Amino acid sequence: MNHYHHILIAIDFSAQGHHVALKAKQLADQLNAKLHIIHVLDNIPMPDTPYGLVIPLDEDSSYELLETEKNKLKQISDELDIEPACRWLIWGEPQQEITQLAAQQQIDLIVVGSHGRHGWAALMGSTAKDVLYHAGCDVLAVHLPEF
Image (cartoon, rainbow, N blue to C red):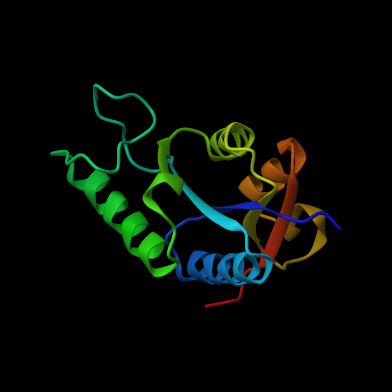
């Protein structure tokens, strides 16, 4: 088995996403691996911004929805003790942004949530399935509990 040095959590901000994050944190602690986190904004409109798709987390914006997402990422990252340089908030298509960031940051393992429903198509959400197919590293699918 490979020893994982860099683990990336691909997270949404649901209670289920929090479950995935806690599992990734537990694994990172056991392996003494560095934990990274990404949240891809695909559900709020992108304003005309001077900085492009990667959102600078240390700058304030007047866009309330964006500030809300930044605060959520900061809160969970602080809870998981993820250093600021390992936090990403990016506008785009989740599968593409997650796998691209994983390649850029030399991630060894991506942790995503999966649904435990019937059949392969329902086993994973579309993002988790797409990440599994396109990632250049291992992918761990954490079963999402029913809340």
